[in-house]
Length: 401
Image 1 (cartoon, rainbow, N blue to C red):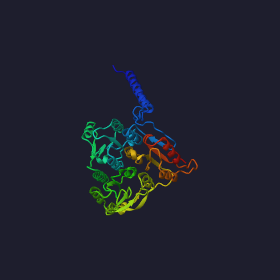
Image 2 (cartoon, rainbow, N blue to C red; image 1 turned 180 degrees about the horizontal axis):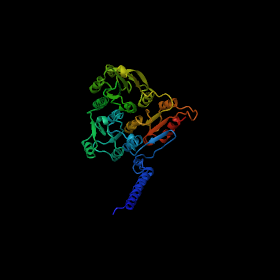
Image 3 (cartoon, rainbow, N blue to C red; image 1 turned 135 degrees about the vertical axis):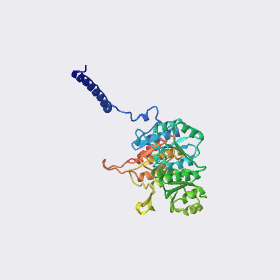
Image 4 (cartoon, rainbow, N blue to C red; image 1 turned 45 degrees about the horizontal axis):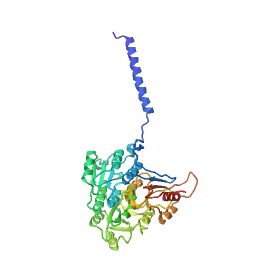
């Protein structure tokens, strides 16, 4: 027989049981501490022999694959959805021109680091980094998570399908076609072609390294030209602008003839990036260059042209890399997209070019009160065989107040 005392006893038991469960849930809620840094497990990190000074941090790995992954780890911790990339860009480590052009895909809404592959193989370091990043997918491109750039073997696509990674392949039979296809894809995403474009000679593609950080930062167009000819694919791409293009030339008159300048002028306004005697001086010229003026848009959305870093004072970030290591130079350009936005400055193994020294002296902070002190910062990309400890020390001193 169910009595009143029996019900009271049962209700008390149920209350105590429910209360105990509630206490356990609250304890778990308040005391549980997730491991936000599991992606940086000591056994998995690709960073090797990192050297840190007061004003510089070196990013390095055993090879280009691990160094690119290390750059990606610093840029995208991937601990929350907010610090994950939307996608990953894969390009072959033996294709210099393709790699430099791929920097044009980094910017929003793609929001992706560049990692390296071989023609028919995804190195372990690259595959592990893709898995760690777990990209969210580019919403405006049907949630594509992997972008393949240039000539890619079928085995790569097969492996991505097996891993169930949704990919898009931006192809090009040559660097000129690839540049146009990349630009057309970005234009489709944004609904318009950018009026601002940069060109560099295919005979010396390393002149395009300086634009990689700017394109990662702003997402303007980039195309290759020949020393004595504007290829038809590049010409067609320049014609796609609504009005005249604003064409900024990377390279010098030894690598680009007057005939090519005249051909480019048919498509719009041409300007030379200063300091183009060599790639080292040009990186300085690009870092200090600024061009502001009339651009495009209807009266309800009029936008002026604002091209170039224009850095001539303290309080900035710089990326130091040796142009012989062009793979990691391109990967490092993502640091201009996320975090400390700043230009690439090109240096040598064991020598800091005089123009770099003079520029860093120009932007050197002036000592002031601690509350108002401006600071410069430098990313040193690559091992000590690429940029020596001596050079890193010299850079640190020049960046310091």
